[in-house]
Image (cartoon, rainbow, N blue to C red; front, side, top):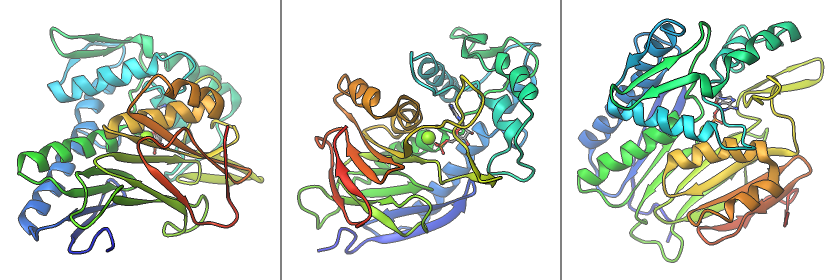
Length: 323
Ligand code: AMP
Ligand code: MG
């Protein structure tokens, strides 16, 4: 029986992305509350509209600390820790570069090298001071900006999961524009249960390389095909290398992470994208509940292991490989 036999699907477009909620009891009111919650949480974190708590921190850069609500403070603390992982390229202080490139937004351009050199000193995560006692955040220099774009969806997906559990729901799937979080397993499934598509890079959203089967896990993908522009035959995508200020340039087209918490998936997709396959798989050996699927430019698919999921390749151009 298909995974979503007997499911009820509710959809919306939010944060510029399609959002899907799958339940196994019809509940229009619950779906509406979930979408409201997503909107509220996004309003706390956005860096593109005032007023948000993160915008308030950015606007006070170089001047004063700003106290924020506990959940936002905890997320910022997690983001800071992830930004200090040696060899990783996740950096939540990347804001000034993201704003300068505008990749995925109107007015994108390749900044002159001088501009990038000028902005690099403003993206040091160590220059973001946190104070637990006052739950406040201070950016030391004028021009610094926090950007939680890489992890907002994962964090929100986890909050939706918490909310659904509180409401007594124990079988559901939420897809926040490619960040999938699942509760339990579908009623009619056996073995691995939810089937999540692995998108084929540069093809339509519905075209898949294969499928990932999981139960009670999050599945998050970061890909260079998600937001990019082309100029003079060059492909500039939205994951920036904090060391150079330019889009990360390596063998990878996408990284998918299977984890319990979606926010971890979101952090690790960016971290692993920067580390590459060899170092990435090595790092994952230290984590029992995080796994990855890498897709390379030369059409290989590599799974770090398959303890937490099952993968089925369906596209004939790609082949399974080991690192
Ligand atoms: P995702 O769609 O989860 O891969 O996140 C991409 C977004 O993360 C970008 O649009 C930027 O807002 C932000 N970003 C870009 N480069 C980095 C980086 N090196 N570390 C953290 N966030 C980044
Ligand atoms: Mg992410």
